[in-house]
Amino acid sequence: MTARILDGNALAQRLRADFKTRAEALAARGTRPGLAVILVGEDPASQVYVRNKVNACAQAGFHSERISYPRDVEPQVVFDKLAELNADPAIHGILVQLPLPKHFDSDAVLKAIAPAKDVDGFHAENVGALMQGHPRFIPCTPYGVMKFFADAGIDLRGKEAVVLGRSNIVGKPMAMLLLQASATVTVCHSQTRDLAFHTRRADVLVAALGKARFVTADMVKPGAVVIDVGINRLPDGKLCGDVDFAGVSAIAAAITPVPGGVGPMTITMLLANTLEAAEREVG
Ligand code: GUN
Image (cartoon, rainbow, N blue to C red; front, side, top):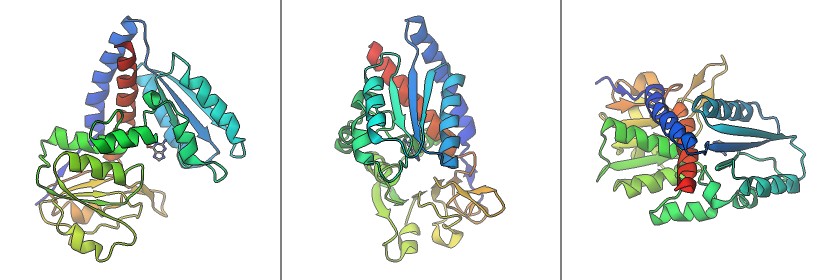
């Protein structure tokens, strides 16, 4: 079997065209969706992510603000800025790029974002709403993964879904969404014994562990749907995922490539959440 390639760029393009139309409809009613992105420090990867987020806003006709601070900024400066953005009617979504420097209490920072503007869905209130099954904002990466399933007509009911990684950003919300879609969900992590035992049982495998080409063909059930959330840089500078694409694509039913799979969908769903926040506000 040669896997069907789930093309994140193509799906993202289709969704973004729809968002642009919806943003224009809102603009005609006097509201332009607005996103504020806060970056603390000079981490090169975070700088790239933030630049891409701001550029995606411009292309979709959204307003955006990028607010950057040096890594040694006093946390109170960021809290004050968040209070200002929470009250700013031109801003519908607020995102603080993670990870924050060590002297920050990340949970406290995320809690300082107004839940109605928390387009990452990381505020404790929004995490709780997702867990209870009525999310206000779905975290962008797992939201993008669910869009792949919907677009490809993959029915998750009763499927064995295995998530590799238990982060608050991907693994945990991904597991909740798969559960909500009636899959049987297993979450594996660094302390899991016999990881391959679990992955070989998976009808749907989501790899979000941050290890280059970790998932090899012998770990995958033939005919599985494989979603690769990893973005790793190889010594030669090339990007690769957590899945050995060449080997696994020969036996999977469907697979997302890296680059061009989950990555473009993450930013697309950030636009979706910002647009939804603006639409909710307008009513
Ligand atoms: N760092 C890595 N992924 C993300 C994300 O989705 N949102 C934020 N805020 N920071 C991140």
